[in-house]
Image 1 (cartoon, rainbow, N blue to C red):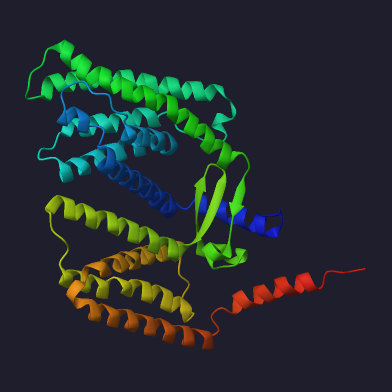
Image 2 (cartoon, rainbow, N blue to C red):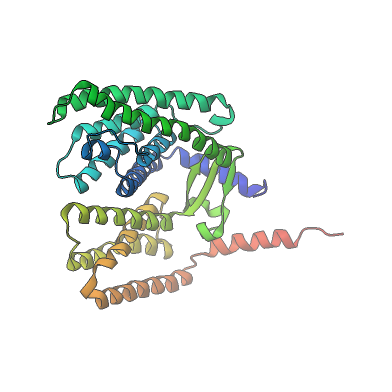
Length: 364
């Protein structure tokens, strides 16, 4: 994107949004939930950080993919996100797959996330190559601290008593080997992340993602990766996030309780959840009020949840189709009356002004 008035508008709106307390709260919650989801799904394929220690008390070489993922995201997000995601992610995995909850392992994983996150990433951090070495050292120091905690907790909480030498070999040394591989790979991944996304400041604003002109960027929500800002339509972002989180929690519900959400419950939620979104979008469309980024995200979130829950309606399939037709009919009616009340006129006027500016450029 060339440097022009659009860039100035984006930067100004972005700086204003960065100070928005509701955005800060939402973003931090979203980051924590995202890492928890990543931890859980990776653990489903490769086992959680505690799995090898809980299910096998003998020395066994195994690369800890889940440990790698948690370490990488903890450094990117920070110590508090690392602790919360590590603790809750491990707890949810144990709840879904273990017959017993090993709460000390939840704390072990959370503490490791906290220690790694203490050396938090910031844009251009790895422009200085020495920080790659420092990251390796931080992870290594965190590893030695965790080895001590693992050995002590295993000696205290284990129902089966082992000699201290066996505990050191089968628990301490094994964790060291896993963490050593992680300590070697994570700094490289962070360097590549920094190189790709933080070398230059970029604002990626595309109509296919935002559905609004740059001058109406207050209708968008952005995610920042390094120094790269990617903008999305606020309500669409809420829909996608809501759908993904609903998918995660319904999957979690099925794993823990070994049952699916009942069709009648799913239908009831599909009736109720879209209503706030219709009210928020509809009143804006009729120019009765102006919605906010927060309301768009929230209402989009509940609509996304409803869209996912449609897959649980099963024998009420035709009722679900009727609901979709009914709600889309309401949307169509609101669009019609909104156009008559002049909604979108500002958008069209801005677009016309931009086209006139281009057509009135002097030529030789």
